[in-house]
Length: 145
Image (tube, rainbow, N blue to C red; front, side):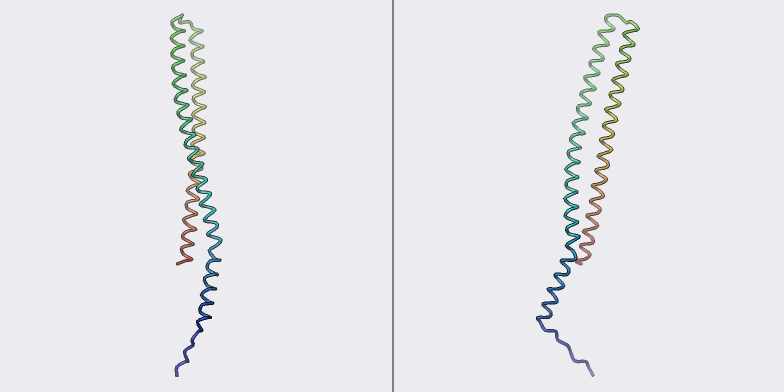
């Protein structure tokens, strides 16, 4: 004996299909929102990094210019002072100026390093967001697949 074949009415099949579709859409709505927010945050982080890159480049150009001006000024002043007389007091003054300029250059270098470290942090955050987006996309694809 074979069991009688059950036939499901078309209206029930259509209603079940609609229910499955709605349930699937509701299930992925949260991850889609999270993915959209994360992508927006990533874009904002990228824009901020571009601004930081521009600031760093501008600061580096200003630093090079300041170093050049300081060097020219020091050389000019040294020539003037040595041309007048090579006294110990003048050499001591010149040495102090050079030490101050070296200290100022070191401070600028420290500021640049700090800015670069912030940039590294921003890049790390961007990479973390990118990994999170990739994971969310994979999970989303897994739910669709």
